[in-house]
Length: 209
Image 1 (cartoon, helix red, strand yellow):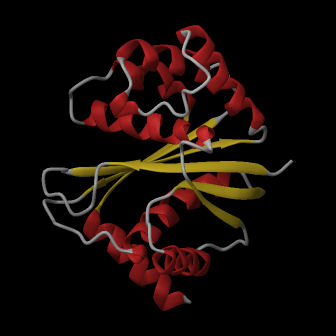
Image 2: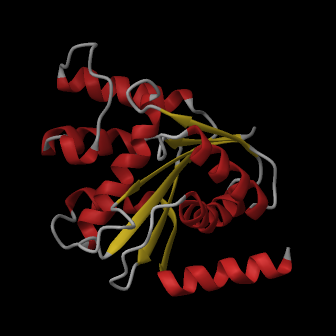
């Protein structure tokens, strides 16, 4: 069975106040289970059916606790990329974001050799930027796969990646490690890299192409 991979990030490339940026991926062979996860969390929270998403930075502690409690019971793989920007203000371009996603997906592909599709919480608003990102990432990856860029209010399962990325960034900043501790045993791969090294890997890849 082919896996579905969900990707989102926390922190930003251009903001110098963000010392690191985290990109997280959640993989599953059974994507419907993430819908069930969302529904179970919503039911326990006794929220109305109008609740469209659960985001780390807009959810209360009880919501986060319930969400992660259910998440760790599911058959998912979690992958995290942590990039130390070294104080740089880095332009948020399709090429730079494709670089980050490529570094993460190399690890994901080692665990899920067959991937049906990769779903991104929409990062760019402009169609041209999305197309450029897709083309660049396709060139970097060594396998063919379908990309989808979605609105997390409509494709709620991608919020799982947002929750992982947000909790990981909070843990790194030393603000709150409680939620990271809840799911850390489900983390298949955690990559730590600085921005200059990430750029060197990209240059090496481009020379080999």
